[in-house]
Amino acid sequence: MTRDRKTQSPGWHESIGANASLAAPTVPAIIDQNDPDGLVSTGTHLSDLEVLVPLWPNTADPGQTDILALYWSGAADSPAASQRFDGPVDPALFPFSLRLDKNLLRPDGRYEVWYTVTNDTGAVAGSDHRTLTIDTRPPSYNQQLQALLLPADLTGGLINEAYLATHNDEVEFRLPSPGFPYCTPIQAGVLGYTLK
Image 1 (cartoon, rainbow, N blue to C red):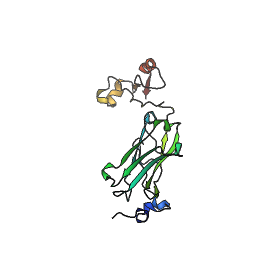
Image 2: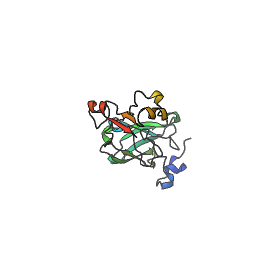
Image 3: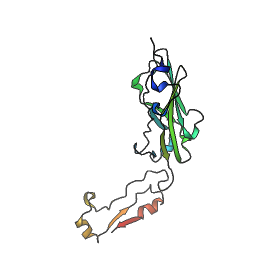
Image 4: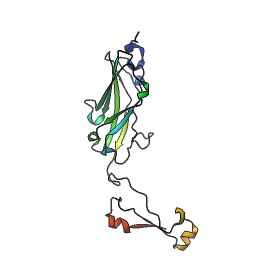
């Protein structure tokens, strides 16, 4: 005997209220998952974006079907990705990975990603939205910056009183070459910053 999914779970009410939303998807590329703006890592826009969808309640039983549809606020007219699940749905598949085409990740800005699940009765449950921010503007110019180069004569990477006493109370750091966006490789090799 199969369950009546249209009436059994709050996630499948015909009219879904704010309290019946499905859990928001997660985006591994977000640097800090607690950041409400969801800033993504440098270079994220260069490849398809992975979005993870958690298992929803009251999944399809044998002979039933669930349709998962992923939406992107930059192209919300139709799903950006979708997947059909024939019952019984295997919980081991979750969180389920879907990918957004990298061409959707332009221009820079704040976007939202969410999903819906439609069962075979036509009932639709929607998730909470997850905000994410794509920022490819300076200072990084889409490059992951490398660490400053320590002085060659700095023992163990430790700046102490003895080092400062022998270097006129200054420490000179160098920019790595290549990789600093404001310099040519030649400039990067000779450009240094001194801390006093």
